[in-house]
Length: 150
Image (cartoon, rainbow, N blue to C red; front, side):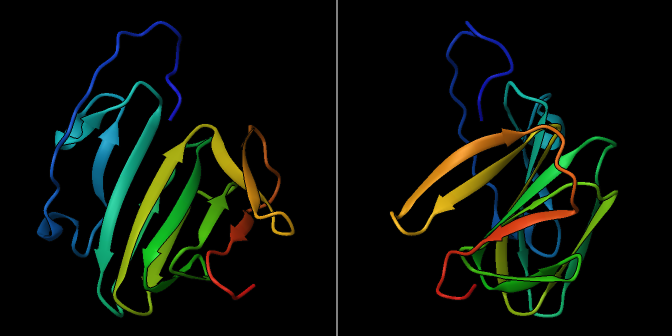
């Protein structure tokens, strides 16, 4: 995450979030105001971690004007009906809520903020770049696959 303003004094935080706290729910692990025991970041962002068992689901309401990025670490799920698997990332806009349904044991990170990072890939050259998109016009902007499926 980039800081919300320049010249902030450097800081460092570290915290262990137990699997039991992330199991079956979205556990807030980083936020602007350190709420609910999360780490503090200097950005209007909420970062959640989750571990879901096969068949479990979670929902998350997005604030108005908020976008999200879901990054799959392990397993498979659907995000508002779109299938994702380990290594995939999905950018979401224009939705008021997210429904994540696990189709296997799953580990993921959900990043929600006013601006969404969209990873654009040049597969021919094996390169990727990060672009900030302020007003995307579609609900699911795209899925970046981390495996061999398209």
